Image: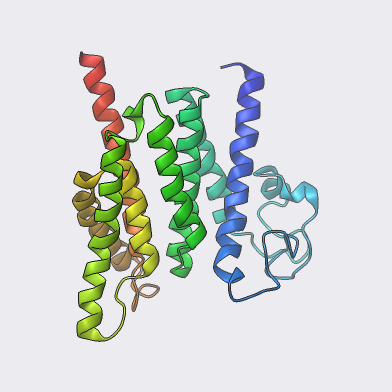
Length: 262
């Protein structure tokens, strides 16, 4: 890997990680607060509300320049911002090493970006933005159509993706329908229906039962780890997304080892 390309990739992925931080923070409140959008107000300290100067907005460097504290009020800056940036850096560089720079790697990284934002929006606010959920489905369809080598994320044909979407969507919808008949209220959010449907587009109908099983188990584990936060409600979407990542990684390495042996 050339050093110039490496620097460009590092800066790019860290910047996308920083963007994800902003989206995770703002998206859950944009529907209720009409004065809040992706561009206004400018990035500011949540403790003292001072606008953050450009040099402190530089991914990783801005955090280190401030020694992890706001330059004005000296309150600690959440390490989540650094975590988001590093996670995108690791995912992006890993994809580059595995697939190089290609249409396939770009689409897969975009899917990762969407899932990552959805994961944290659900974990922190029980919120799955409809626009991001819809983009998951659209991007999944585009990937199935344009990819000449689907071994990295999907083993299915295009006609199976529709069945995967319908099974994913209506499996959770039907469970919620029965629950609502009994309890007179929703037990599963509508965003979870569309989320699992989008996953079904990429993995097909046979992967849906696996995602539901392991996604539910992971969700229960999340609830047990933080009983206080998730006392009344569990982030099923987050559990499904983590299960999806595990499913895809396992499939990739299984195919990689198979092709190596052959």
